[in-house]
Length: 490
Image (cartoon, rainbow, N blue to C red; front, side):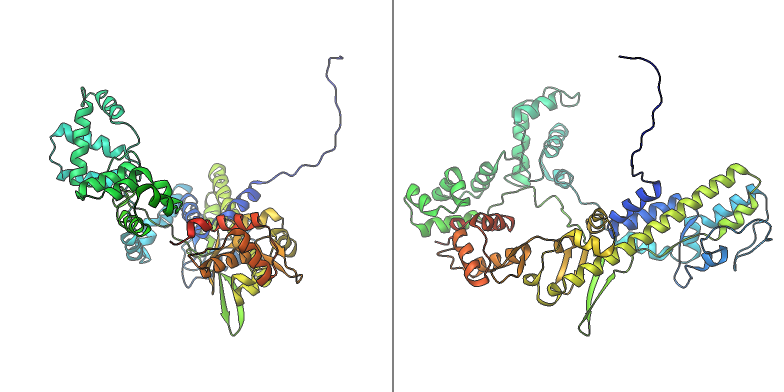
């Protein structure tokens, strides 16, 4: 082997992403809610970015400073934007004045937006409480001394969201005993505190599993129900799989008695912590809206949750004031460039998303007119080719975004689906086939439910859709429809 230094030339192709491209891709992928939060963050961090208030012209600043919004060349003389005083003070005073003008608190107070923001804050729901936080409020009703109350707090913080206690009482006692305040805690102390929690708050809190949870509630009622107890202790799996004849044979009771006991079982609480913790449903804000007007479907982006953005006109005067201070001038130019990039990225996101949505619903107009059964198979590559973008751009644009249609609110990804060719030569989408399977199951005789083989046969006879039984099983499971044996009504 020859050692030493040498030079060589090599040709290769590389795709390098600029910071602007990376920022544009990140913003394209944001939903409207996330984008609104990102805009708020940029407004706080960049003093040269501002919202266009109602009644203002978004292009006023651009027209005043040139087509691209850049500052005019030096030597054109002082220029004052209407309604603004020229910044002819020194760099220090100019900066301080600009900060006073940009101060969001002052601006909110001056333009009368304070009441609106205060109202929005007042109407914003508080963060949901966990099971432990909700139960802490209930501990005041327990008849416990301070030591017992500390153990009770440790217990409620050990519960999972269902209200179950996954750790053993021995482990919890050891953990409490390891602390200075609860040194010497015994298993008997922990058990006594847990019993008091169950007596006052919920009889099944701290259960180890579903079986113990149900038995604790049954014991608390004091009812003499041997069949119900037998179901809980030995036949929970049989109930889940709808094997009622097996339960009837094992218990020596009739099917009707078993069904009555199961109905009573449904009144017990399988998740005792559920009534204490607060679970808030995630709000969906559609990014795209489709409306029918005189038989024509109009596709547009929903009204933005934020006003239009623009560069603050003040930066031009500020640059003239501080042009001798190179450090401050560089700072201003960098922030202005950052603001311009952000505005361009937001505008590009809106334009790209709208073009993709329009193309999408031109191809899926059948869905808008007839519903899911008319949904056509569609690949992202087809939309990307028609819009003139890369397939990854389409994927980013539709990710996490929803559309409001006359048929309801759907994820944009819902309209990209594979399909199966019918005997007639038409192509049925997977969503349409799943919808048809769900429809057949709803219409079946519950005493003799349709098997997957029978569903496949009906799809072939009635809809001319030939798919294998295993495909029917796959779609049925995706729809969370139980098997025929589990759907059977006795």
